[in-house]
Image 1 (tube, rainbow, N blue to C red):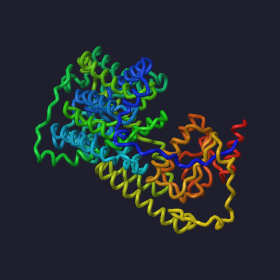
Image 2 (image 1 turned 45 degrees about the vertical axis):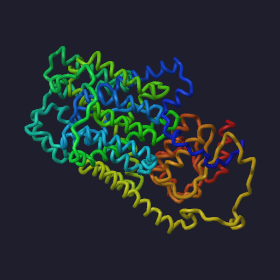
Image 3 (image 1 turned 90 degrees about the vertical axis):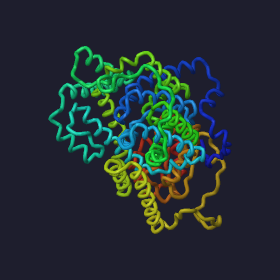
Image 4 (image 1 turned 30 degrees about the vertical axis):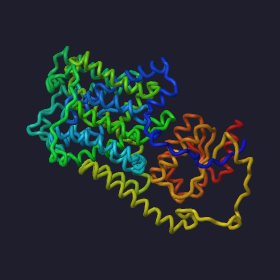
Amino acid sequence: MSSNVAPSPASKEPSFLEAFTPKLVTVLREGYGLANLRADALAGLTVAIVALPLSMAIAIASGATPAQGLYTAIFGGFLVSLLGGSRFQIGGPAGAFIVLVAATAQAHGMDGLIIATMLSGLILAAIGLLQLGTYIKFIPYPVTVGFTAGIAAIIFASQIKELLGLTLSEPEPGPLLEKLPALWIDLPTAEPVTIVMAAATIAVITGLKYFRPHWPGMLIAVAGAAVATTLLDLPVATIASRFGGVPSSLPLPSLPSLDTAKIVAVLPNAIAFALLGSIESLLSAVVADGMTGRRHRSNCELVAQGAANVVSGLFSGICVTGTIARTATNVRAGAHGPIAGMLHALFLLAFILIAAPLAGFIPLASLAGVLALVAWNMVEKHAFITLLRASRGDAAVLLTTFLLTIFRDLTEAIIVGFALGSVLFIHRMSKTTAIETQRPFVMEDEADNSNRHRAPYEEDAENDPEIVIYRISGVFFFGAAASIGSVLDQIADTHRALIIDFSAVPFVDSTAANTIEVLAQKAERRGVSVYLTGAVPDSRRDLVAHGLRPPLVHYSDSIESAVREARGEERR
């Protein structure tokens, strides 16, 4: 066998209409039969079972009612799947929004929250229509890991009161530094029954995930808690005792009272919703792409998210975004396309119309246990530890974003983290320019006879359909990671071995290393061997620190040696 050099595949720029064609249209054009509908119905039901307790829990933690969480999942989730640019995206209320939504509701009231939700939808749609969604991918990897971990910590802290059944002498403070002392003062009011209820919920979900991973652990745990509370008449707070139950009908669309002062006041909150929503939804779409090998359209997805938020606000819902956990559940359940997400919304609608009174028996401690696990699962623990060990620069960006998210503000954390990541890139470039002067940022033209070590072109070594070589030239950092990752993702689909040459790469940052790691894991599932060649010691050390080590990938000093190794594996 021989190898071939694969240049970046040239793809025709899509027209405006093509770029904003929903994935639903694409799926229907492919041909949609009864077998596909059956697969989507089963996946939609599975996701609805997960979304039912989660939507109510997130809404309660956000300062809204359980019904508002369900309205968000029904109307927002339906439109995200109907209009979106991702084949598998599931929309609804997300844990990442709890902090922002709760703060907005506390500062501006429910009307202010709904106005901010609708404004964020208009902003998201504008970002998508202006085709700015691609720039969201330029956020450095340590920033996304840091703010996600920070949000998770705040979500967990917000559930301590319900987990322990505390009775607070004063309203619960929002900021973490004020919240923890207030909770500590009222710790003697903790209710043992509530603690046992929350602990049992966590234990059941965790146990079922380990022993029966295909069972709907959240629904079983919450339903079991509701049954136990009712039969044993346990003294714990429930949805009915706190909120009066869940209405068994849908609200009519209505606009909150609008005035210029209120709109101006909530505009910063709306911008924060749009920023977080764009990041969260596109991250979720990328996860779905990695699991399925399909590719989403970022700007089309943002337009769908915008429409979903506007309509959600019209029906008293809260912020809508793509949700990673529910989207991954959708893929694992065997969904064929967006109709699964639309059916998930219809199944939730059926619950409201038929079985809404049953939701009143659900204990709040059980929902708090669900959110505690959501917070734990949000933290990318392996990535957090890897970035702390990778370099002082990445650790500084990570910890700064994490701490600012917890103690200051999410938007401020993202802006400062991005700025620090950019400064870190400039610093690394200055060191690279001083030390690796033979590897400039932009490779200049040179005469063919200027390089004595220039190897002759071997045409038989450049046209093997089984082995593909991709040469990266220049710095491989967060600004280029999305584009290069997209190219590598496409060319890795149809070959048995992929060789990525780093000979002309001065350095690799954490975002780029994560891009290669995701690609390598995807290639491993498809039986494609990945070889990394020519990496300088610093780059190789960064790649290894991010989990790129044998047997996931193989390292070689040169392309030639990697080709020989790949051929040997094929013969075996």
